[in-house]
Length: 443
Image 1 (cartoon, one colour):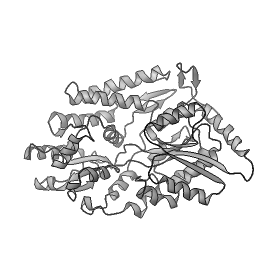
Image 2 (cartoon, helix red, strand yellow):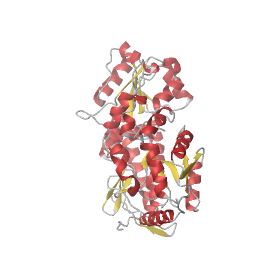
Image 3 (tube, one colour):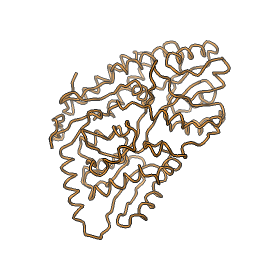
Image 4 (tube, one colour):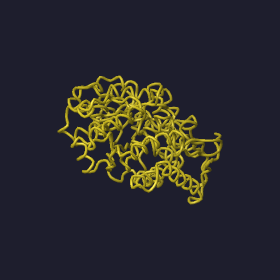
């Protein structure tokens, strides 16, 4: 198997051969070889024996689905461990020690690091036929250099929740473009200085990512034998200009999301819109129950002539290095995330917004929400999922990049620099970290 030499990690004293980036993708020679060996080992299992698959995940209701699968497949026994706390770090340590589970639920942002470190193995031969049932963006998130390293499990398509009473009171139409959004922000604040179009949280990376993806930007990519870093790319700078204007003109609040101060603002009616993923309405219902009936959901505002929406990130179920029978593990992951019989449970019990086309077509998504005035809000998020461009690529140091961006954004809110400067600084920190890991970075 051929691969481009992109990674040499001096700290671990080893070299891995990869080609990376979600759009152009990434492959790991050692993982591919390991997958073939382990598949052969699984084939040597005694005829008529029971194959055991150890699965770690966090989605509610998985226990029932595992039991359902086991009952229908007596030759396979899937055991389930519910992940909490620092279990994610425990998985990494266990896999490195040769004692990890067979399957684990993983944030799509973290998958490239797992591939580079050899902690996952490709499952293309077992799940290639599943691709047609998934949104293009979600399947891209698990595909590296033509190899598939996981089955998507849930996505975070964007939408804009808005207060109907605040906009109607001041005769402001629901904005459909970002230009209209800026004008609505100005009109709202001019009508009442205590009203703001939104809260700009310096600690919430998903809200930024969804708009960069909407603008067809990406933090990472590949050029020849090197990584590219785009934290300050053209798309990100357009998003930065938008929010810099809103911040400079005093049209947004800057509370950290999820804090009592933030929810106090929301409950007081200080904030007219909240743009975030399909899972956020549940948090809004739980933390602002007294505002029931006042909210609706609309698509994220767009650039003129564009129908693009964004996504804040999803998850995948991946087969880890060392799995005794990767075929059996992949078959369960395929059934769990993509079969017709699991979609309703994943939606209603698991709280997932589906990455599958059969899930997006499920009646379970189309319930009226009293909190949102009886609106079927998922119709908006379904359309968003269908209009999310498959241009976002993950990279090998997501955690470093995220921390760098949020650290720099805190300085912006404090008035110490601009968003454009923050993106430049975060870009430089991310590049430096990649190079310290022995990766080649194209500038």
